[in-house]
Image (cartoon, rainbow, N blue to C red; front, side, top):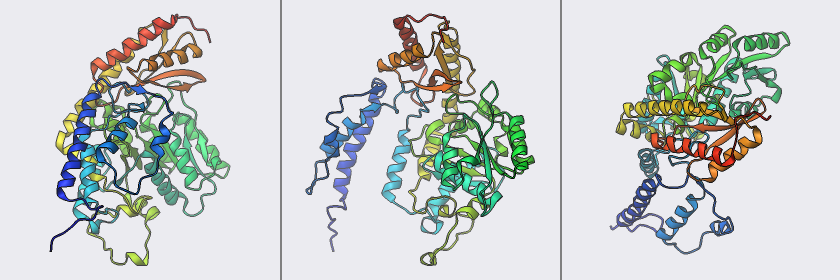
Length: 471
């Protein structure tokens, strides 16, 4: 009997035709990234057309693809080499192709029994990452959509391990530079706002271990139950790394869960310099890491690593009568019992394919290049008397401001981004406005950084800013 696909089930020839159009679009737009504007904001008067509901009858794929192409040009070009704001990555095409394969296969990986070989691939990548971070044998984790859900699972595991069912007086410790996802995770996990304790930072914007120890002691004396210390391996504003060895030792001494937010900095663990700067991360109970930042993968790729996966399982596992047909398969994990998701897409391939295809050394070399470029950019910015560049970068984030003051600094950022050649972001530190430059995109090469520096100097010249401090 011949198989006649339904309109929703495409035949081989149709798949090949649509695939050719899709791959041609990907190849063309990727090749155009070198010269595409870093940001582009066309008039928004036609956006209502993009909100039209779908028609009852079939549409034309090339027309729909063109609609997507035009829509994707709006806003900030986060895939291009001139994107130096926040935490750029670029989105490796090899990872996107891996996602295409994984989504087409459409296997369920919430439990190992339904796709054991694919779960093994994902487990292998997680085991390798745990080893690269120096975690002990038996450490494990899961791949998430980002560091935020990874952090939530870590907070829930820490709460369950150290507080049990009564977490009314549980407290966790952060600084003003800790990513807000930690506080958000605490709130979602049922902890009141008063449970989040702010530890002072030193002059280098790092958590002060002595201040943390004093706060923990004080809180215990007042009837609080300290349970988690959140250190950061690369803060969002400045890329600063907290003193991980001292904080890990403090957490062990005080019987706290040590969580490290390495969402940005984690990828640098593949480099010799990164391992030196992230020393102490191997003592963490949990590590949140975003490969869509410092491993250059597409957005939506996060990792949670834990020293003892039994704590994850105890906090997240659930059962039901309709799962009675599911059996454990040896040492393969059921990812649905380790995190907040039950149904999850297969994410292992988006890490596995690029790492095996390009080789680990290619990632190491790319990350070393970004460290070098950030050092060069910092040196040149610091040499300009019109700029205040107060902190040396721990990784690849440089913050600077116009010595003429906050208003001048805001004008400087506007002028830089208006060129479309590069796109920077800003932050506020100590009540002052700073521009923020992060060299991290896989497509950002030496000539792009030189172009960024030239753009900054030209904007300074055009604004006629002096080296005098006005605020």
